[in-house]
Image 1: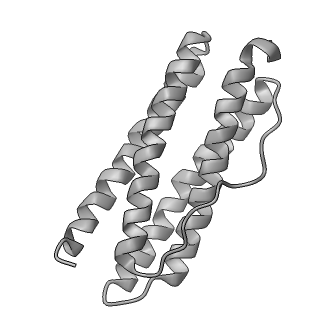
Image 2: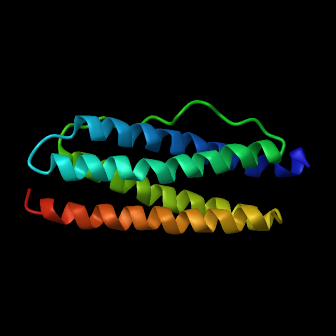
Image 3: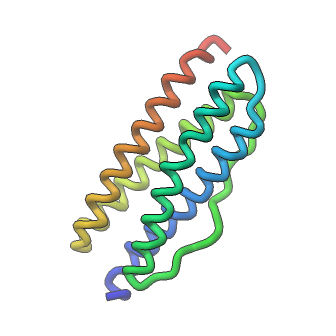
Length: 144
């Protein structure tokens, strides 16, 4: 089973490394955010962490169930200083996350891992909601 599922294990490990990065990114940006909207953005960033932790927990458990070993290193992400740059970085991360999970859900479907496909599709909805919420918040910076 591991051999035939190795492409899926690799894909899920890639997702896991990005989820770790998202957790660290949200914590870092919550701590670093400054300015008039600090309080709201601080709370927004912290609130997003729980979803990312749940995604990471699912991915790690599924990787092991498929016969793999979960990665432990996050993907790098840009450190930026202004609230607008933070939101733009998060928007791009969420956008590419939706694209990556969509590709990986298709892979799961091709490999007959329906449970993984459905769960990844659920995660896609959550990540798309994150992306859209960030886009709405970015609207207040459109003149900057």
